[in-house]
Length: 505
Image 1 (cartoon, rainbow, N blue to C red):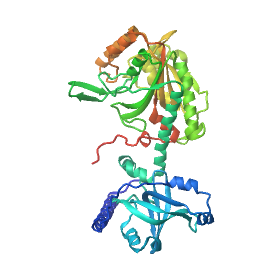
Image 2: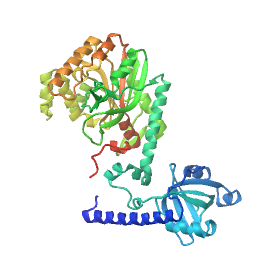
Image 3: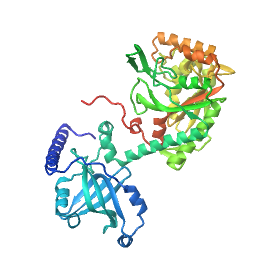
Image 4: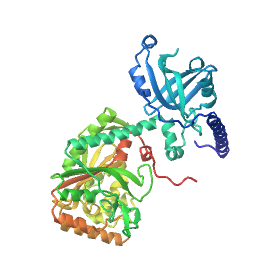
């Protein structure tokens, strides 16, 4: 629950007064000849390292075999008892308690600690380990130095940083006071490492392709536009790396992947950020069935490494990643989850009638395939909680995918759905240059009719296909959504360090 106006004004006034007090301390520190923003410090021990290594050492062990330590970190808790003080310092690995005693550090140093040091300050500590009366492993300081003076108070520990917008806008504070947030981003790093290792071991080559493109291709999305002064041309931030990666397949690389940023000029929600991370990979001599198997294997490998299990909790539901996962064609899924008859999806008119019966507005769906997709998104998608491959999408909404040989109105494509959202999109790649040209031309007509997300004509890509591309399967996986799943985060903003936001007022 947010604060009312009076509470907010009082909060701002209190913070301003604390900042003023700290600035006075800053001036006193400077005038005493101490640098409040100290020099480099050789930190030899981490909080986690000390706690892990000596967690079993008893009070007697530590008295008998002295353990010296040199560390540094931010003070996140402070209790002063007159002639001694306890504090917790936090570094990149965790927190450890320190004990500063007047008799040990001396009167001058202790007075400085007592009067000038605040929660939020960075300090270095040299001392030795002991256990307190409550048996907490603690560093007794024999010396300390101020490394950086904090001028703004951290959110109070009992109040914390709970305002979601401030958390995203001031992620630096969020990371200081909310250890769980830090853990999410450590796990994110591990997930990406696991994926890289997995693909590297399968013989894939990691590559980089342009983020600024003269033609935005590889997806149906509205691009961001920028201008290159030297070339005198407009360029687009890429919506997908697909067409450049497939050019590399034409060039003879048989397995390639890229983990990088894509940009789509679309809405912001719990599932969408205009700048997001995507894994795309392409595999020669394969089709979309091979990729379903590979995707299961990759997800299982990553979940085991990161979560230690295959049954995970996500937003209050249990998600079971144990293979094999359910596989349904788009039509089968609609029939299963709306109880319609397959014959109701057999042609355009019957499908439009079904949409009307289900209460779906299809004003913008002017093709058979678009109506089928509208029905799926409105009535089926949210019901697919457990991992499910939805296969065989309409050709008219899949301009880069290979047609099903005995059903040319549909393509060899799948989307992986988990908890009602798409995690991956893949298909057997269209490698017929004439068919590709016709699809691009159809997309061009849709763009001219007002569809801002329709695909552009890409003459160079068609030319590349004319040199010959082997049968290939390709897939895109939303890294942010995968991280959401494996860290149990309901919003994409909780897995992106700096999500896009309106400017601060």
